[in-house]
Length: 276
Image 1 (cartoon, rainbow, N blue to C red):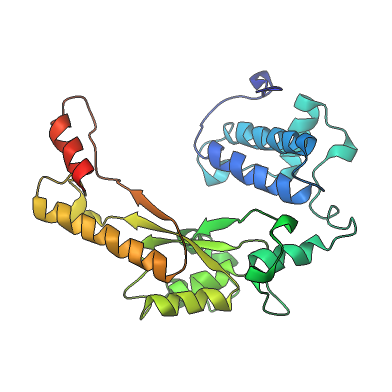
Image 2: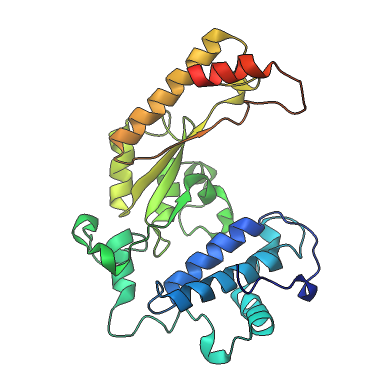
């Protein structure tokens, strides 16, 4: 809580995406600073992240508000008194006797250009963090794709995973269930094999209850048959996670709950959720 951002330096417009910018900037700082786990460096990472999040509030929208590294560093110099030597420079901080670039690829896949690395045999203390991304993120900015330009190619989950594999340091993929399965992969084994080819692993399976069935609720739906269907779908997602060798299932109850006080019978609906 020390060294909080002084917002007199910026003009607040829109908070959308500010938290995402904070988290992303913290990860950038942690991978760019030598001995990133040191207490002083963690503080610098948090300063860098705070500046990124603050700058994101100065522009309208999510993606348009993402600041450049140069903008973040400039604000850190003004706000936190950073000197030029203290700047986060991802291009020059990987040569302190350890080939960190190789270590990143060895541990966490992504941007593999020479050989298949064995994640299980890597030493965890070299780089203990696992960075991942939602597979859905890969459908954005299709003009940046280097692969086949056809529309069919860009809607194929295998190609989305291939695109993920080009991102250096990225190690795991978060899938949406059921949207990223069934018609896209013959089996969970095929999905796992596709990940392996890109030196990636599954990070989580995230429930996205289809609106066509669950717009009135999933585990709190008034129809007991649909509540059971939501439970069954959740169990299928858990089984998929097991078969992909990941240990996280994200249950996002997008349609459960209420929008205003006394819209629903609280006790009855909470009990539905508990029972589920």
